[in-house]
Length: 180
Image (cartoon, rainbow, N blue to C red; front, side):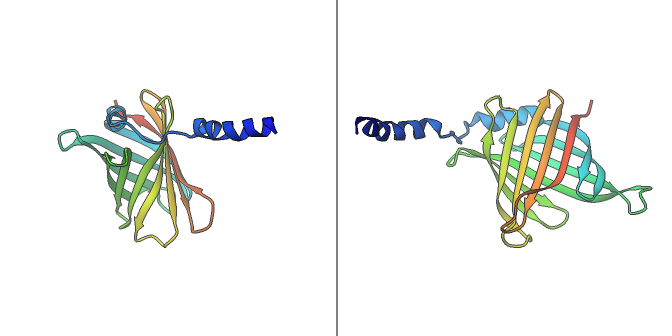
């Protein structure tokens, strides 16, 4: 009986210590922005084939937000020329009330997505964003963006989608290299 009582007494303490703190400090966006600010390029593995992309991150509005402009090209059907298939603009901001980084994205395909950063690794090299809302996307879809910093001038971005009731599937995964 004494052992059982001790387990019940310590169980809440153990459970509490295992919880992951998901709040981000106001400096999380600043640290994120300092790394990404600038021009990037990549070769992308897309679910339909290979492509190339260029991206520009820029601090805007008195350095309060980080804007990203993205353009990606894909091989034409005949695989002889590159054609534009996607453009987007987005803004990263810090929500003081939720203590989270928020990402809002508008695409040339007329989609709007809003993501919240649910997880930042202790070494601040991996950021995981989950979708909060979509416009012009079928109901029930979910999105996830995982950004992993490999080194000073290289990061990997992994974009996944899930239809209602289904598991996430890779849509685009690419390695981005800072332009010199």
